[in-house]
Image (cartoon, rainbow, N blue to C red; front, side):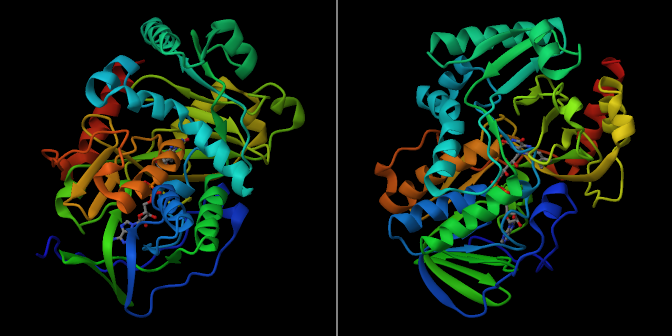
Length: 427
Ligand SMILES: Cc1cc2nc3c(=O)[nH]c(=O)nc-3n(C[C@H](O)[C@H](O)[C@H](O)COP(=O)(O)OP(=O)(O)OC[C@H]3O[C@@H](n4cnc5c(N)ncnc54)[C@H](O)[C@@H]3O)c2cc1C
């Protein structure tokens, strides 16, 4: 039965001009150039696809990854590099909607990254410095306090931080307080993605770049067409998140790929590094329009948040991001900025990641809602087990039907309007 219709054949694109791309340089891209057979095919070589491929290959399953560009080209190689725990909702709500295992799993996810990096010696500047969820006003502070109480009741070891603690840690008085999660960490996401791709290949997976899947048929197994050849597979995983194209039109219409922008400063002098997150902790703010930041292994200050709802390709300075950072840390004016880039964070209407099943042979796992570094890493082995062992392998999230979002094609207008409104009322 043909499930899927034809989409445009995408010309493959280079890496966005980010600080991370500058760190890793270019790589040889090997595309699919013949017709092949495999046990499992994975569409998308981000953290989700690669973590799943690694796990499958390590258990002896033949697996092929098809990537339109190159490993880490999507959100996985351009994100904030924060290895954070949890989901958008508070534990009580997650338990109601998804079950208790989803809470445990999502708060353990940073430990999975740590364990994987250590086990395979992945070179990605990983540091387990902990992370803050910081509140900027009394209402958000009450939400953080309630979150801490809920986590403590479930024996998840987070700590409360006062306004003074956060001022000492960040060098700004912007915060009323926050939560500190000792499991959180940071890494260079492009290095991490490439290291995952190499580890998967070392374990026996084939990872093809410049190989967009332009057509997929589900019949007796799956056939995935790329411009250079086709893959016939018993099972398939779609791991395309915010870069989901028209391959499965309903899947694309169920997702809102909102852009998030990052500005990277020139390396901070040692005295400034000693004042801003000196323990290499990461920080993200609670609330609708959130900012997130860290100081990376090169001493650059990486400040992320809202920006234009289109690719900026490095040429366009995100004025308001820079202005806010320079207001909070005036020394940044002198230090200056070196890189700007953005990418698609994949939102879902209910703010949960979505696992969809296509009979017994196909899975999609999308909608990481801006928390994919840890969650996608942790979900990989779980999805691998499901693909390998079928429904006897439990999932930590409930699988669901694909539900297109009304007016989804107009999401950029909706997001701009919401942000503008928030900016006006938030002044
Ligand atoms: C600016 C920014 C900052 C972020 N900060 C953080 C953070 O600090 N911490 C955190 O946890 N999360 C963060 N996120 C979210 C995180 O990056 C994502 O949740 C995660 O990378 C998703 O991984 P993925 O593998 O599911 O998808 P992606 O990494 O987006 O990979 C999808 C891949 O699918 C490929 N693809 C799409 N269609 C096809 C096709 N037809 N054929 C072949 N290949 C195809 C794309 O080329 C892409 O490479 C951030 C995201 C952005 C954009």
